[in-house]
Length: 390
Image (cartoon, rainbow, N blue to C red; front, side, top):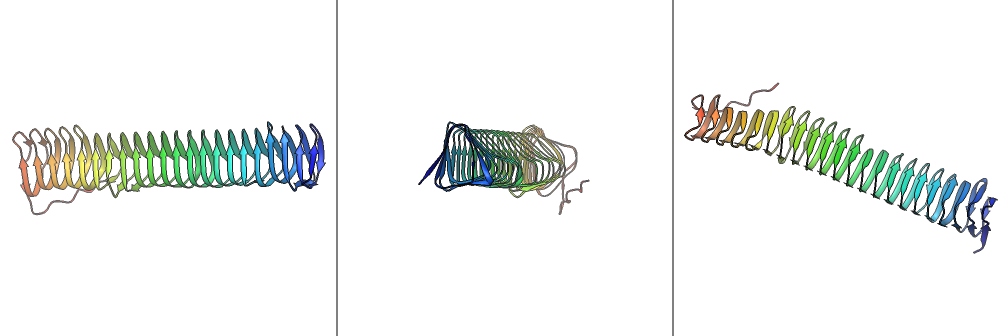
């Protein structure tokens, strides 16, 4: 194949180039009629610039940067040691840049690998994207896999299969399959995620639907949360209604509306729900506050505190804990606990426990010596329903 050579530092006007194009250091290409079409490949030792659109089989540079003042379309690949800047759209199956990639408009590619930073001003459609430093995409994007060592900003609706980031992530919203983040994650609009694992803090400012969520530090939502499984090492703060399967949190859990789980809820510290807390098995180590707590099983830890009505098949109030009104089939009050009212089928009250209100039961009651009962227990045919709450 024939070859055309552009000497070092030359400024050349081109249109159609038959064969390959070899460009010297710091040369400038000016497009006739707005576009240069190269039948073969472009090689350069050093920097070069093109004023206008450029179309070729491939671009390869050594120890240089490339600036395209227009659109860039390549059939095979672009390999640039330093910086590649495209002041328009870029279409290229394989992109490898040692430094930074800056595309002012849309980027379409199968594979993009950049050692430093990527900035895309328009939309992005990429199968595989690897970045050593930072990634910023301003337009809507559809990406198979993203791997970034530093930070990510996706500033429009995203559709991503896999996102792995060592540092921080900020997204607008969209749909994600798998997310793994070493630092912090923030979504500013509605989002759907199949699985997310965050080492630090995860924040959701609008409604979120998440099947599997694992956070090492803090989970914070400002709107409704639809979830499958949640496991948080530190704190959960939900600023709306939350409904899902299971929750496990090592520290504190707060919710400004209702929290409903079809499975288990386990809180190591305190739990504060503005309205109704519902679960299958509910275990709280410290304190719990809700207008109504309902499930099959409920337990509060030693020296814990319950504020609100509890309605569950099995209720266990641990030693030295306090509670108000309890409604259940089987209720056990451990030693030195303090309770207001108890309504159950079978009730057990241990030594030192104190019940200041009424006790109603339908089947059996056991009260150890040393328990303090303000009113004589009454056996009834049916128990009252939990009192309505405001």
